[in-house]
Length: 115
Length: 112
Image (cartoon, rainbow over all chains, first blue to last red; front, side, top):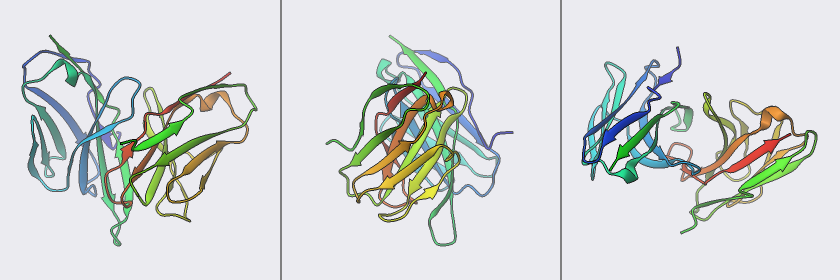
């Protein structure tokens, strides 16, 4: 079992739909959680960063973390064709000194938003 | 706003050749990273530099060397390229090693 898993998709939705992207993890030591967006032939771009259970909202994007079930979601409201990309989940843990001890990436979910 | 700049963007090498991938960031970040991204494998850390003057191995360091030239620049060297090193290479940086990373747009490297 991989430490961080995502459904690869592709996920295809009509413009304006609410999109739900999911990520599960197996290591309870993970303390912080990130979502990145990657357009074709580009580098990953940070969307959301959180280290607590619950919801974090930024514009049309909401990240939801449930540490008890080791489940992370990214919701995109009013999806646009420009949201078509691969979405990567990344989970990490710090050591006792606050340094990054481990960062594990999911393989990503491909999203297509159709006009 | 340049952010993280990688050169070259594309490169084709023959097996056994050497080359250096360059990375520079203008965000005054302390930590820098080199990843490779392959289909079905995701992003894998090759080497990282938590701060100027330090470098450490990541998950897949074999066949690579790095140099943290100064605070801005972090280079990745392939001494004797092999076809298994065909990949897309990303450089990233972060304020400190426990903060989110910001990526460049990658170098697409093919080794024949």
